[in-house]
Structure formats: C-alpha cells, structure tokens
Length: 176
Image (cartoon, rainbow, N blue to C red; front, side):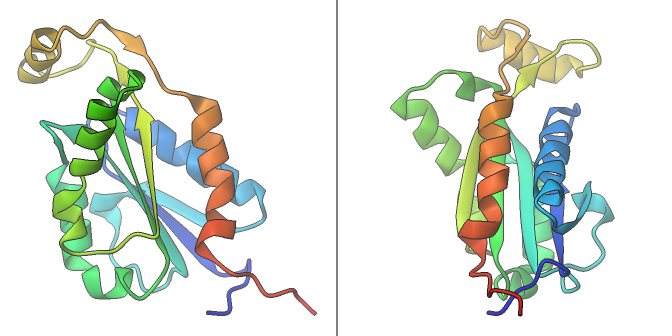
C-alpha cells in the first residue's frame, strides 16, 4: 500500500475516567509531530473509519476486558478496519507491575476484539487510579484488588510507542 503523510490517521479511544483519553491524546500528538494528519476522538463519536489511512484504537481494561463501546467500534467497522493498518492499545492500572501473569491478562483483554479485527501492533500501558470521581462500584473493585491511588503511566513508553507506529504500520514511499 502506498501511503503519504497527507492522509489522515484516526486515534479513537474509550475512556471511563480520562486516563486512556489522556494517553490517546499523547499518542495523537506524537504522530502529529512526525508530520501526519491525525484526528483524535472518543469511539462513540466515530461515524466512519473509511476516510482514514490507518486507525489506532484504545481502551481501558475493566474486569479483564475492553470497554463495550470500544469493542463495538471493532464490530461496527470490522470490514474497513481489516482493510487498513490498525494498532490497538490497552490501559490498565495493574500493568504498573511487570510480571508475566499481568502481561498475559492484558493480552487476553483483547480476545473479544480479536474476533473482529486483526491489529498489526498492540500496546499495553499502565494507567492511573484516582478515586476522585470514580463510581462506587469501580472504587470498591479497586480497593478489593488492594490498589493504592497513584499514576503509573509511563509517558516515555507511550511516546516511544506512538513515534514508532508509522514506521511499523506503513511502508512509506519516498516522495519525488
């Protein structure tokens, strides 16, 4: 596929409390800084993915899965998403710990998504736990898991992943 920097990339995210949205916006900014046209929006605002040359989609992990609205994006646009480069990322506070079981669980969070689309790139990032504004049920789940409030996001890892995306997703032809 021939691809130019004038074509647009969509960064679509689902976010319950804003942490994943913040990560998506950093990803979009990093790709934009490389000279690409980027739209960044909530998955609920996406009307069509066909205008985009590539898509980056992300969701927080809740109860071991992507949010339903993020999976719905894959279901609704599965044909178009499978016709263009796709990168996906998951955000979970538990990923602040580096161990095989947590990484395996994070990869498993995308199983339902994989039923609909094939992503060329997957990213996994630690999130943040800020009890202010959380629903009572989500707060109870975090407390039962023994989570202490904090921000475990590794902005360097997010930025490095984002900057690598175009070279991973596309084979750019030199402009004449």
